[in-house]
Image (cartoon, rainbow, N blue to C red; front, top):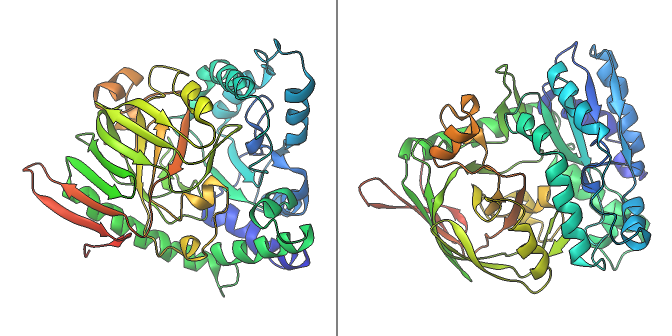
Amino acid sequence: MTSLFANYLEEYASLILKSGLGYQAGRRIRIGALPGRSARFFTPLEAAPLVRELVKQAYQMGAPLVEVYWGDPELDLIRYQYAPRDSFGEVPTWSVEELTRATDRKDARIYIGGSDPYQFQEIDSSLLSEMQKTRSVTFREANEYLVRNPTPWIIVLYPTAAWSQAVFPDLSPEDAVEKMSEYLIQFYRLNKGNPTAYWKEHFIALEKRAKGLSDFAFKTIHLKGPGTDLKVGLAQDHLWKTAVLKDREGHENAVNMPSEEVFTLPDRMRVDGIVSSTKPFTMGDGFVDGLTLELEDGKVTNVKADTGEEFVKKTLEIDENSCRLGELALVPHSSPISQAGEIFHNTLLDENASCHIALGRGIRDCLRGGGDMTTEEFLAAGGNHSSVHYDFMIGSAEMDVDGIDQDGNTHPLMRKGEWAFEL
């Protein structure tokens, strides 16, 4: 572990548990994804110092049990390389029942990211696609619980060597980790006198922006930029949200940190035009760059990509609605992550540096009453239901965004990547 990041472990763990998870005494906590899920959500072995601090503070706050599921993506790589080619229809299934039990117990969840974005870049895309489909089918029932946001959860980051050197390939592993540590300390505001107080005020400001957008009740959002001319119809009772969401018991917590976004729910049947990615990204175990999609009546009709094109096409066939949008998020180009001037090859960071959209599952909190709807009711209201949810970045300093109201009037929301309306 770096000496730099070690100096902030106590503050970081406290921020995750208090400002992020909003931890309440008496809840069990699980750190890391259960076996069978994507390796990108496993707890990195290098994150042990942070995990130990989280466990210590959690018990001090009244947690009855903290379980940690470690992961090593290298084992997944070995499987892709050497396992029988007809064996990728299998993943551990005991964790499906455990996910259901954990949800019923109201266990809180912490995911620590930091995987190598290039880990599986040389693997045959057909194997990656088959594994993705297997996970989707295996965990479909469990995901039906999770999409309703039943318990508090959060995704955070740790500066692993593989990830850091993927971002800073010209540096030594040690120097790359130090550089990534500097950025994470900045992005989490750990060097502020009181990071907890900072994030409280930051989320209040984001919520004010989200409420202002919700009050407009736009019919359509029009995004224009290099390679993008996209009209995204919004569900009639849509709401704009921040990363602070409510679970089924009304408990609020931040599900992503750091966070600079406000987001909402597209009408899955009313998206038309062309959209291009502005940063490389991962979809499950696949790596994608230079993606361009054409959509008509909400459905992707054409796919082109410099890297990962076949994988994207297979992803769009995972289920009936993986080819439609589930999220639209706006982020100003002036966000601290964007101003760093780096591509971090990590969706949590890169999506908070750029406007983005997501293929697949819609966020039920972004529909008035969505958390209480059946899947059929959610679909009938315009939402999208899918076993996948993959964000990719489309924003830049050249992005213009307009809101079109119910009367057809156009309102400028962003110009050249920055907010263009006052609250």
